[in-house]
Image 1 (cartoon, rainbow, N blue to C red):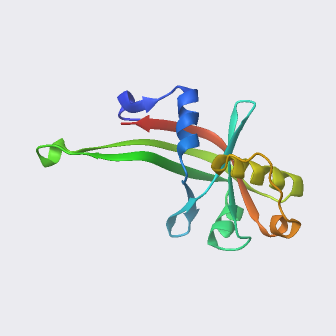
Image 2: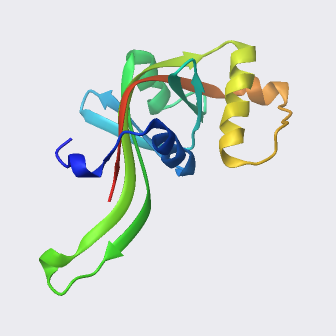
Length: 155
């Protein structure tokens, strides 16, 4: 990272920023270059490992790309604020951002899909208990990413 003065290395603060984000952009490789898709997500830490979960329709370009590769990149950001200045070069922008990479896979196991959906819902809602209709669970695709590296930056 070029601006190490803006790097956040405290894991608690990194997780707090991640928790406050509401959109994660998943970067996949396509034959024509990068394919970046904004997604809702859930996350959990298990034995010091960070996992991200995404849900999707069962078919489409994103699912085809996930099936074709083992790794992906991700990015999320928040707290955007323009800082005005007297001149163009004095303008700045405040933000918090996270970038990283991980190993991805589609989850097919019914119980693991249910777990992922609960993790996903806990990120966006305060309610603890959720019931999911069997047909909906069968039809949803769950993408799981084991994060292998990530960094956090704030200005």
